[in-house]
Structures are given as C-alpha cells and as structure tokens.
Image (cartoon, rainbow, N blue to C red; front, side, top):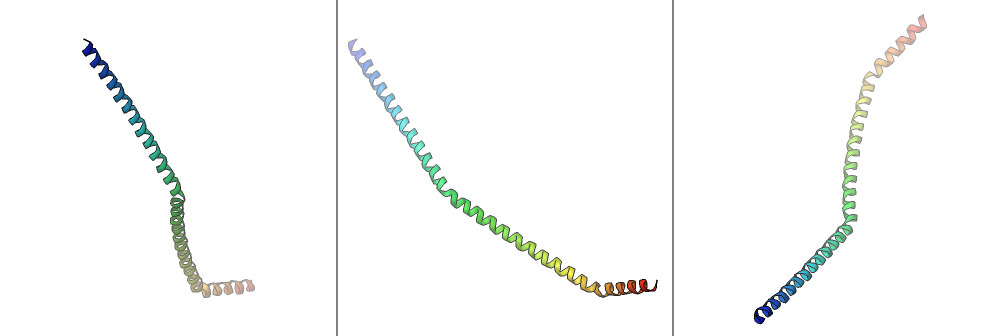
Length: 106
C-alpha cells in the first residue's frame, strides 16, 4: 500500500508540476501576444502620417482635376456666350436705333 500511495503522491506532484508549467507557458504566450499587439499598434501609429499624407495627396489631386474640369467648362460656356453676343450684336444695335428713332418721332 505504501508503494501505491507513494506512486499516487508522485503522480500528483508531477501533475501539479505539469499544470504549473502549462500556466507559465500560457502566461508567456499571453505576454508575447500582448507585446506583438503593442508593436503592431506602434507600427500602425508610425504609419498614420504616411497614410494621412497619401490621403491628402490623392484628395488634392482629385480637387485639382475637378477645378481643371470646372475651369474648362467655364471657358467653353464663356466662349459660347461671347459668340452669341457677337452674333446678336448687330441685331441689338439695329433694335436700339429703331427704338431711339421711333421714340424721337413721338
């Protein structure tokens, strides 16, 4: 019986040792995971200025493209209006003269 009891105590001691090793290993894995997460967060934080700069650069490019397109449309419309004004200039002068002359008769 003493031998069986001794074996059981040895098994219990070994089991406790295995449990403690597993706990230590779990704590080490947890510590490593937290450290890796901290490093990843730090790397991301360091990249924020680059990400922001890239975003601003793209936004400025799109804004410049939009401004250019609006300027082109404005210039086209301005040219159309100038052409229309030139086309109707003589008619407007004739109508104005007729009104002035007609007003002068009355």
